[in-house]
Length: 374
Image (cartoon, rainbow, N blue to C red; front, side, top):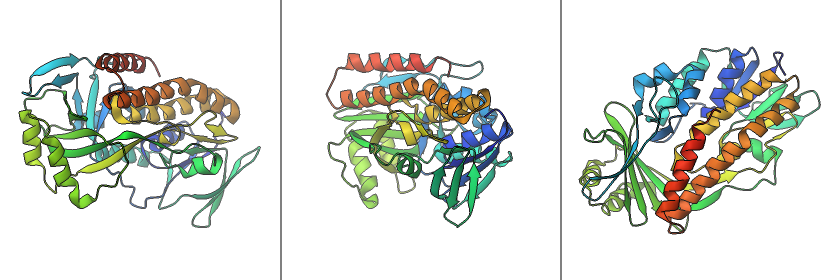
């Protein structure tokens, strides 16, 4: 498909926006549909593997990120008195960028949305597909508003509970709860922490990541055998109680600072790795729709956005859509599988089903693999 075609992107998250930007700039006519009429991005902060800066540079948002995000190096494991027990390096993967970073999710979403608006992408908010009819020469799509269109390629980038996946692969496995949940909140950036810091507790892991010059976000991973509901009105006190398990002065200061304005987010952790194929005919899925990972390697957003980069490259490199999609899947499968499965194994170890040495080994091996070219 190395001649301009009509492409539909379903989902306006990080992966979908990245695909729309790159394919539009290659000369394709791109429609982007996003079911949320306000195009909102929920959540607190997001920790970033340094490899994502290569993607930001490709998308043209790296300078914008420098202005509103945090660029940092290394991870510190700290003890009950805030003492540094170990340092994990995060080597730079591109000139002029550090080995890791952090940013508020809505801020990164805004950077990408602004970038999409500067392209020729036709953005349709409050809209999604109703039916997909894949044929030899194109995909006939009907939309919720009664309109329709014919596309050379349809990209499902609609997340963990993908409607595209359900339509194309109705027998696909459901997301799997992994026995942990994560709490997130926004706090004042501690001046004494130069990088990402983590503390280990009983069935708990606390971390803090800078997301701007003056703000950080905390993440607290909790072993929770059952995926039980936590009412929003109880989340503030629940998080403060969990932080009480840590004697470190930083943890106690965070607990004292938390309030109803701290943007607390609670989320059970689920994962999904769709067995190949990731496409059928002219419909392909990317990002969390096919490889939703837990946050243990801070690489979920990165591998989804990498999908967009690789897909755009293969669409340009091949004359036919099937050839492009086969090449895309071949390049992405092993990298995505590694992140999903290794992150899941780290979660198991943190729940007592493994050793600290294995945990460190998996983290090191995965970081090394992610440092390789996309």
